[in-house]
Image (cartoon, rainbow, N blue to C red):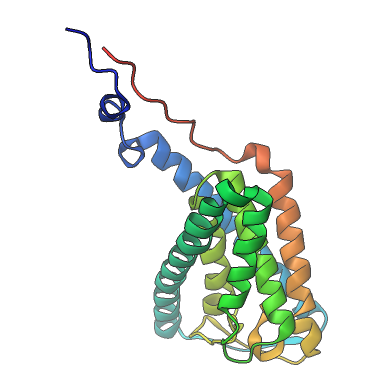
Length: 232
C-alpha cells in the first residue's frame, strides 16, 4: 500500500514552531533587538529634551515605589504590546497583504493604529499622525522579523521605558514611574500632556529608530521557512 502523501499527512509530520527550541531562541533574540530599539527611541527623546532644557527631573521614586512601578509597568507594557501587535500587525497587516499587497497593507494597518488612539486623553492631530507613523515602524519590524516577536519587543519597550522609567505620558495616559519629570518645552516639540508621541522630537526619534532597523535588517535572525516532513 502506498504511503499517505496528502497535505494533511505531511502536516502531521511537521513539528509545531512553538515546540522547536531553535525557533524560541530566534523569537527571544528578536524580542531583545526590539527592546533595544524601543530603549533607543525613548532615550533619544529623553536626552534631547533634557539637553534642550525642556525636561526637568523633579524626583526619583524610593525603592519600594520604584520596584512596584517597574514590575507593574513591565507587565502592562508586555500585555498592551502583545495585544496591539497581534491585532494590527498579526491580523490586519498580515491578512491584507494578500488582497492589496504588502505596501497597501502596511499603510492601512498603520492608519488603523493611529485612528485607534483618536479618543485618548490629551490627543492632538500631530499625535495621531505620529502614531500612524509608529504603526509603519511596527509594521516594518513585523516584516523584517517575519513575525510578531520583533514588533512586540519594540512596542513593549517603548511604552515601558517611556512611562514606567522616564516618567513621560504614554499616548495621553500617565504611569507610576522611576523618575518624576516636568516637561517645560514647547508642546509642538515635546508633545506636552500627550507625551513624546505628540511632538516633533518623538517623530525624529521614530525616524532614527526606523533607520537603525533598516540598517540592521539583514542581521536580524529569522526562522527558516518550515517545510512539511517528507512522506515515508
